Every structure is written in structure tokens, then in C-alpha cells.
Image (tube, rainbow, N blue to C red; front, side):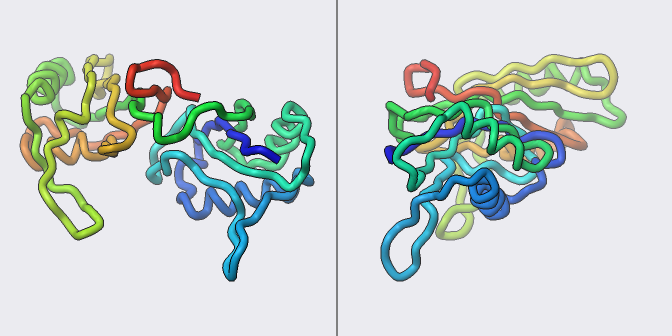
Length: 221
């Protein structure tokens, strides 16, 4: 059967499932739903499933994308969605399944939302200072790479970012960041603050992926 693409959410307690455990969860879900995944050939066959942008543990998302192939020639996509959802653990929900028309390499931007929590600092002042900090032309931080650690300027990977003080002790953020080439992990946003402006670094931060876009900011599916 031709390649299919699944759009799914990962929220609630499921945000603590690692990428490897998520892949195993997906394989079990297909097995329980009565559909057989196609495997690669060779000495070490692997199921033909791949997630476009592996999600960090602790980050939630309502726009995850996974490509897969089944052995069955004909599959009722609507029925498959319902059967998979009946087997998924709490926090993982299949939103839609379809035949993709675009390559994952065309995925360029991620819309994210986040919350910066502060225990004892006025959030309206934090909002102003956060806005000023991320308006810099350059934000150089240390980032782990395949060769170890190196310095990287994350500012070009932030297309848009805004902050909004909320009643209580938190500041909400809305941003569009580079999904790949380069990849900007949202965790680097508070990391940059801890390194360069610790006085406005949050006591706690959490993020949610909201939407995926191509290079021209058209929805990517």
C-alpha cells in the first residue's frame, strides 16, 4: 500500500513518553487494531514508520506527523483512525489519516505556545524584559551537536515571538520557530535566558506545538 500520514496529538500524561517508547506504542497500536505494518528488508527489518519531528519529553503537541506503510492493499482510513484511537494510551489521539502529497523536507516552521512561570517576580515587568531580550539581533547560546557542544545563534531560527503577561505568576508566549535546517528546540528559549539574562529566566517553562508550516508559511500536511 502507498505511504500514509497520521496527524496526532500528544498531551497530558503522554508528554512523558519518550520518542523510542512512542514508536513502540505506535507499533503495538497497529497490532491491536488488526493492521500489519510493512517492514524494511535486510538483516535487521524495521517497521516502516517515521515521525517527522521527534518531540522532546515534557513538550505537548496537537500537530505531530507520522508516516507509515501497511501490508494491506486496501484500508478504510476512517475505520483505521477509530480502531487506532481505541487502542491508544491516554493522551495520544489520532486526528486524521491521509495520503501525503508533500515530502517532510518541505516542513519548515512550527507554531508553538508556551508558559513561563515566575514564583516571586512581577509578570508585567518580566513580559517587557522578555520582549526586549528576544528583540536582539543575535542570541548566541551553547547547543549540543553531533560533535559535542558548540555556540549557535538561535535568533535567525525565531521567525516571530510575542509575550503576554497573565493574571497570576506566568507569562504566555506565542512563537513561530524553525522546525528543521536548523531545528530550534523551544527548550533553548529559557536556556538562553538562564545563560544570558538569568534575572528574567523563568522558574518553570512548558511548550506546546500548535501547527506546522512550509517555508512560505502555508499549512503543511
